[in-house]
Image 1 (cartoon, helix red, strand yellow):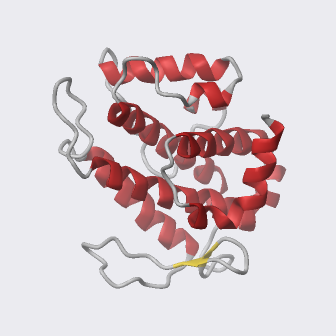
Image 2 (cartoon, one colour):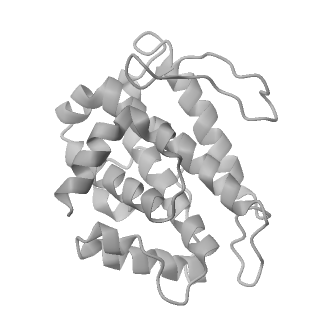
Length: 216
């Protein structure tokens, strides 16, 4: 949750996406923040009793976007065309960008370019009222879950890139506790609802196992 970052640098990569105060989704976000505060992340990600699964996934997806936005915003000066000419997560994993509309055929590009494409694309999905309805009573579309899964799969790649290519910078900035807590919350959430294919998580599998075993 964004509150984990307290009053630290408010520099974000893209503008922060806010949930309107007073809305049901805002109340859900507040509930999530309260349970997160208890320190039990496994419990914090569970669907609150009587709540709609799509809405819970929507609120958390938006919050993870804000978190990653903030985390990546702290290291943009270290992630450049020169330092990261390809979007990778270690030597074995390289990502090429395609969004199916503007760029149909995957293109190889630098990490900052890829992440700019990715975060802009996510922002466009979150801003689309037909996909992420913010008004009470407006139903989620039939393809909502598949869109949410694609968003989360792509957001994972930003975590993977930061861990593999920029962890030294994160440590230098003393942001590793924020990064680890944010990623642990993200992983527990996607595991709880089976939102990302295990193969996609391979670049950070060791870390995921370590975070999971610490919590048992």
